[in-house]
Length: 281
Image (cartoon, rainbow, N blue to C red; front, side):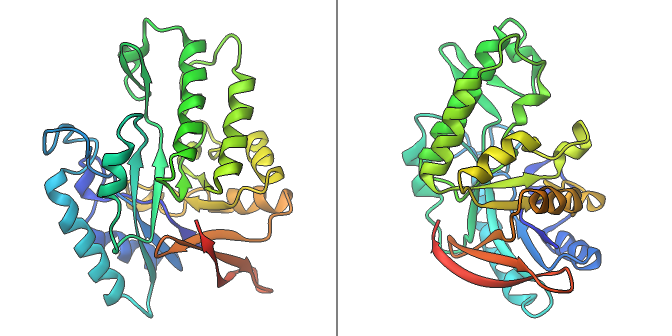
């Protein structure tokens, strides 16, 4: 099992230390674990503007140092990769590019949790922020943000691609914006994770099967992450991810080391082996 999307206590809404998460992963049978807590809000002047959403900027160096040390300590017992989940916020690309240029990092997950509009930001986890908005516009702008995030060059993997489906559905689905986003992802060469947190929300991983099929047709690499915030969520959705990929004829999944993509392929015993290194992502 691989799991490249996990959180711990620094973000303020997950359980356990990094060592705890690694220990739980070993017990769960995870072979390749990625630690990828929420990055600081680098472009905000405050050190910790959102205490229960992401880590403080002052915690960033300590996070990377602790994760890199744990990676070395567990070598031979667990293949640990150091990552981070960073938000895509238009206009902050230069700030994030500088902040994420760290040798400790193996990969960066990119997420759209907030959608920029003329009056500010619609937060997908805060219904009050979009209560007065045109939902069709929220959905369309979400997919345009996904496309821009893919093209930004900041990320190795896009996380929970269709997270916007947690909102009420649009009256007129933004099919053109979705297709444009899938094309932008393919053109950028970024990978997309199958994210197990969808299982906890509506019984389906992110992205939905038709979107995943569209990505596979375009040659977009697939990865996997549970988006675990608690011990029991580690590996959630891995079986569903493997089944979806097998249905689509996908015989390898992407992992990362030193911001370079590697591939894991299924062995005869059903486990995933490898890796073989690929071009930089």
